[in-house]
Image 1: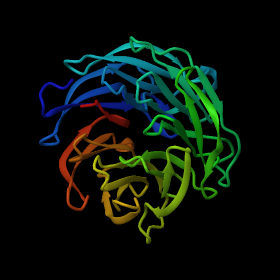
Image 2: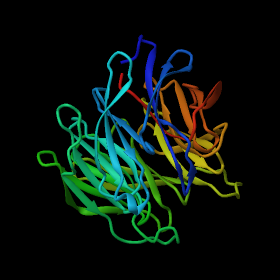
Image 3: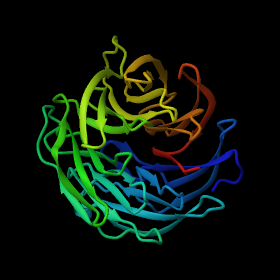
Image 4: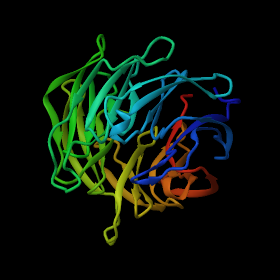
Length: 366
C-alpha cells in the first residue's frame, strides 16, 4: 500500500460543514504518507465530495475504506456509510457506493475480522446497524439494526446515544458503548446472516451520568477499557470472551486531581504491546498516559501531555507503536508525538500539519 517499507498510509476524516459542535471546514478524506522513522507526514491526495466523514475504518486486508457520513438533520433522512476502494500502489481512494446507516449522526464505524460486515453506531437516534460487504467492497443495505432504549442521569442523557460499536477479538460478540444510557450493550453475532442476537446479560451498566463513549480491547483480549465522556474516567473490565461477560475491576480519572475547568473524555488507545494506554481530554486538551499492569491490566498514571491544540477528538498510534498522532479538531491541526518505549511518555516531534476540522485518524494495515 505505501510506497516503501518506511512509509505508511494514513487516512484523515474531517467535518466538512458546520454542525452544532464544530465549525466544519474540511474537504473530505485526506490521504497522507507517514514516515515511520521520522514521524513526518506528506500529503498524498484528498478525496472530496464526502460529507462529514468523521469516523473511518479500513478493511483488514487494506483493500477498502469505510467512512460514516455524519448527517444530523432530520430532513436528510438518515446518516450514511460510504465505501471506497484503496489503490494498492498509492493508497488513494475511489468511491464505490453508500448505504443508509439506519439513523442520524453515525459516529463510529468498524468491521468484523473477516471483512464481511460493517458495524455503525448512530449517535442521535441511539441505534446500531450491521451492513454486509460484497466481494467487491460495496455495501449492501443493513442486514440488522437494534434500537437502544432508556435515559441517563445527566440532562444530556435524555435519549440513547450509541457512540461506539465493535467486535470482540474472537468475533463472537459485538459490544456498543451507549453514552445516553450508561450501558455497554452486548450482542451475540450471527455471522451467517449478519444478525445481532440478544445476549444474557444484555448489557453491563456503568455508574450513572458517566457517559461511556469509546471502547478498546487489550491486545490479549482479556481486558476491556471504556472512556467516559461526562465523567472523564476510564473503566477497566475483565472480559470473558466465552460467555460475553464483563466484570469491572478499576476506574481511574483521565484528569489531574486539581483540574477545575470543563472537560470531556474523547478517545482511547493502547500500544500494540499492551504496555501503555492513552486517553484524550477535550477542554483540558491533553492526553492522559497510563502504564498497564501485565497480569491484571490495571492502570497506573504516568502523567499528562498537552495535545498542542484544541479539542483532541481522536488520536491514533502508528502500527509500530513508536509515534502518537492527535487530531486537534478545533485548532485545525494534526500533531505528532514520539512515544518513549520505556515509560510511555510523549514528546512533541515538532511535526504539526494544518488540516481543517480533523476528526479521525486511521492507518492502513501493514
